[in-house]
Amino acid sequence: MPVTTKDYYKILNVNKDATQDDIKKAFRKLARKYHPDLNPGDKSAEEKFKEINDAYAILSDPQKRSEYDSGGTTFEGFKNYNFKETFDFGDIFGDLFSSEIKTGETYSKGEDIYAGIELSLEEAFAGITKPITFTRTINCDSCSGSGAESYKDCDKCKGTGTIKGSKGFFRMAQVCPECMGTGKKITSICKRCAGRGKILHTETLNVKIPAGVDDGSVVKLRGKGNDGTGGGPSGDLHLEVTIKPHHIFKRKGDDIHIQLPVTFGEATLGAKLEVPTIDGITMMKLPAGTQGGQRLKLSGRGFISPKSKKRGDEYVEIKIIVPKDITEDAKEAIKVIESLYKENPRKEFK
Image (cartoon, rainbow, N blue to C red; front, side, top):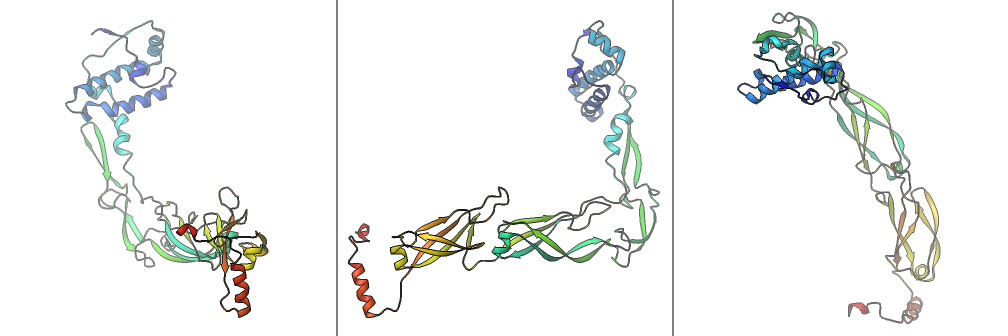
């Protein structure tokens, strides 16, 4: 066998300052991947396995590692591998096959539940604390969620929850099919929950809705969903916000839109008008000669953004209202006003 000067650190994928624990972990990981019993007939895997074994034999021994690092001694590769003797298969693979067998009551998080909450636009703007009533499943208080009034150790697995055996070098374990890994057999089911381990529970909570929520926003209440199993955490309650339509305001993002009716005279001559906003009345100057459909902006009179905490704007669309019932004198006055138009307002249509 020729002398080798291979880079053992590179072979194990560790740095030169790796600790013994790091080297051991790296070796175990590679051993699982390339072991010949897990790669039957694969010569390249067998050679790789020999190579990592060479590296581990040197780097796991402090004295040999020191000599290797100093370059004072070289090492020969191993001959005639006896894989069964070289490795402690129970040590390397035991956790691979056995640790995944979980016994006892199944541990799982409870399911999330969903409900809705309806708000007015004003409530969504200001935020509100509002009661909500909902139903969820909780662990039965009579049997603590086990579903059993009484039980005994499983006869097949003797209460361990697993059935053990061996195959070649490997220690094997599987979940007991009789008790499904719990180690227990129910002798009498709980009468309160009929063996389900869960019961329905209706409760009312005061929920704080933050200012600025929009239609379709979801408020999550952690731990207020269905109870978990085997000590697992409860799920969450998701509340989807629905905002009722408003008779004046329309919301678009953090902005508010409104139509403001004005008279012909106010639009022509200009005026100072009261304008409703989400948080009260404000005064707005209507410039002379304002056209119907024109939009004016009231800065900072929209919704507060939950993220940036900045306020949106309110956009006021002007709607000119024409009187329906007018006197003959008024008609003559309007004709005078009509004569003031210097050009045809529909000239672009010709």
